[in-house]
Length: 114
Length: 113
Image (cartoon, rainbow over all chains, first blue to last red; front, top):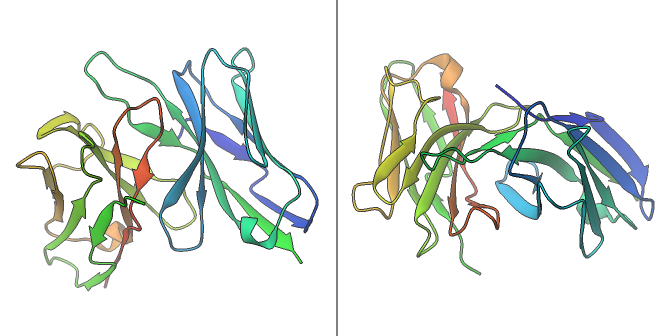
């Protein structure tokens, strides 16, 4: 089952513009992570935000987390052609037995037009 | 930069045959995960290891899938017999500390014909 749902499913913008992707989830979490996947490749970890954090930055990335609304957003500023990829949010729920596998959404496919 | 190694990169197998995938995590990463990603979907967890022990295999179809990590280092995921619906990307990931995210390998693309 998939806990997170990204919105929109696809996004096409011009190079230099900002891209915003949203993620909603259903149950309380320990942290939320964003990953990027280029076509046919593995996933690359972008940023992790803990449940007690509201905002984090990493380079051109800004992630927000609103636990009251069970939602997160990923902002990519000054987009580049190399940012073209699929972006996934993933939620982590820690169990007492040590299980902490991520639950991923279906992703947002981002296309940066040159 | 340290990487998670996976092999093979691509695998085509006939229905009802056995197939195996291998993963070597980053050195020192005690936690290893196997995920399956169907085209157009997000990855879904199959199994999690902590060292050589299975921590979570609740989503692993145990009638045909098995996974092992005998020495707590590299790991093998096996499917026997393969079915058409098993066609997907199989991703391995490892983690040193769950508060810092995972490192994924490049995956094995399985096609069952």
